[in-house]
Length: 320
Image 1 (cartoon, one colour):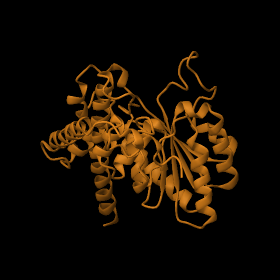
Image 2 (spheres, rainbow, N blue to C red; image 1 turned 180 degrees about the horizontal axis):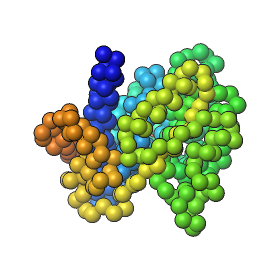
Image 3 (cartoon, rainbow, N blue to C red; image 1 turned 90 degrees about the vertical axis):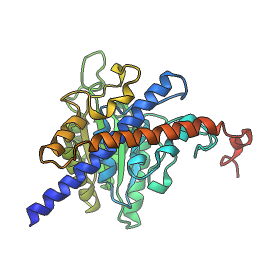
Image 4 (tube, rainbow, N blue to C red; image 1 turned 90 degrees about the horizontal axis):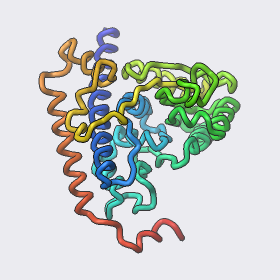
C-alpha cells in the first residue's frame, strides 16, 4: 500500500510539473516573439530551463517564500498568479500591478509569496537568507527559496548570502540554474571550480548537483532540501545543470514549442514518462497547449487594449 501511494504521489507530481512546464514554455516563447516584434521591452527567456523553476515553486510549502532572479518570473505563475496579470506587467499596461514602476519580469506577487525579481544579478540572495533567518528567530515554520542563475555565483552578494546562511544555519534553499556558461570555455568561465555546487563547501552549507533534464529528480531533491531546512538542519545549494535554447528559436516557434524540441528536452522526457503507463490521455497534451495558447492570446489582447497607465500613477506608491 505504501509503495502504491508513493507511486500515485509521484504520478500526481509528474502531471503537475508537465502542466506547469507547458504553461511556462508557451508564455516564454510568446514573450520572445513579442519582444522581437518590439511590443514588449524585455523578456528573460526560461525556454529549456522550465523544470528548475517549476520544481522550485512546487517544492515550496504554503508558508514558504520564493526570492527569484529576473529569469525565474515563472515561479509566481506556478504558485497561482494568472497569466493575464503577468502579461499586463510585461506590457506595462494600465492594469500592470507594478503601475509601470518596474521593468518586465519584475512582477509583484505578494499574494503568492513570491518576491519581485531582483533587477541586479544576485542582489536578492542576502534578502532571501535574511528573511529565512528572521523566520527562524520568530520561530515561524517558513523556508525561503532563492532562485539564481550561474552568473550570480560570481557576485559578492552570493558569497555574503552563503556565508550568512552557513553561520546562522538559515532555513534557505539556493536553487542555481547552471546553463553551462559558468563552467564551459576559458573565455566564458566565471569560476575555476568544476561545479557550482562545490562552492557551498567553504561555507559549511550542504549541496547537490542534478541534471536539469530530469524534472522529477529535481523536484525530489528540492523537496528534501526544503524539509531539511524546515527541520533546522540549515541551508542547501542545489545546482541544476540546464540546457536553454531560446537563442536558436525561429519566428513563430511558440505555436509548436510546448511539445518539445528533441530527446534532451526535459518536457519530452516527462511526456514519455507519463505516456509510458498511459497516465497521459491521448490528445491531453495538445488540449492543454490549445487551452494555454487561448489564455495567452486573450491576455495579450487585453493588455494591448488596456493602454498605458495614467501619468499621475508615476507618483503612486512612491511618496507617503
